[in-house]
Length: 236
Image (cartoon, rainbow, N blue to C red; front, side, top):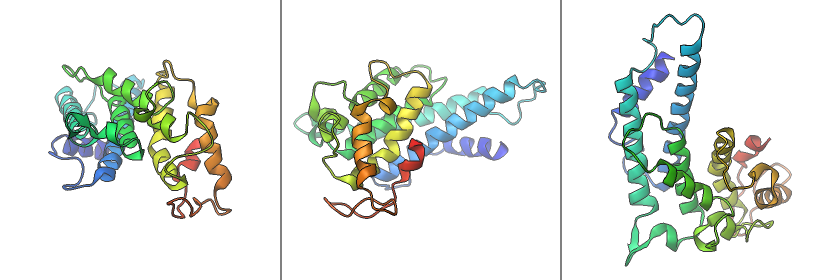
C-alpha cells in the first residue's frame, strides 16, 4: 500500500505521465494504466476507511491535498492528450478524429472515457460527462453518423467483420474490453445495449474468435500479423 501511495504521489508531480516523445499508443497505454492504478487506490482507500480496525490512522493514504493534486494532474494530462492528439485540428477546422474513422481515434476516445471514470474530487472540471458520453458513443452503435462512430463504421453496424482486419481489431479490443467492463460495473451503459449480451458487439468478437489460428493467434491476412489476442482472457 505504501508503494502504491508513493507511486501516485510521484505521478502527481510529473509533468508528463507518458514517456517524453512517446507515440500515440504509448500515451494510450500509459493513461489506461494510470487510470487503473488510481481506481485500485480508491478501492483500497474505501475498504481501509470502512475496516472495523481503522482508528483514524491514515498515514498509508493520500491526504486530501495529495489526492486533489493527483486528480488534477491526471485531468490535465487527459485533457492535453485529447486536444493535441485525439481531437486536434487537421485542416480548415476539420479535426483528426473526424478524418480517420479507424482504430487510432477509437482508442483515443476510449482512453479519455476510461480515464474520466477514475477521476474523483475534480472540482471545476466540467468535461467529465462530455468526454465519457463521447467515448461511449464512438465505441458503440448509438450514433447515426457512421464515420465518427468508429465501432459502427468498422463493423458495418455490428456485422461479423472489422474493416481494418483481425490484427487491428484485436489491437483495439485491448482497450475496448476494459472500457466496457468499467462502464457496466458503474451502471453507466445509458442508451447503449449491453455489449456483452448483444450482437452489435458479439458478432465481430465471435468472428475474430472463429478465424484465429489453432494456437490462438490472429490470422496473417488482410494487413495482419500473427499475434496473441490479449483481450481473450478478459472476455471470459
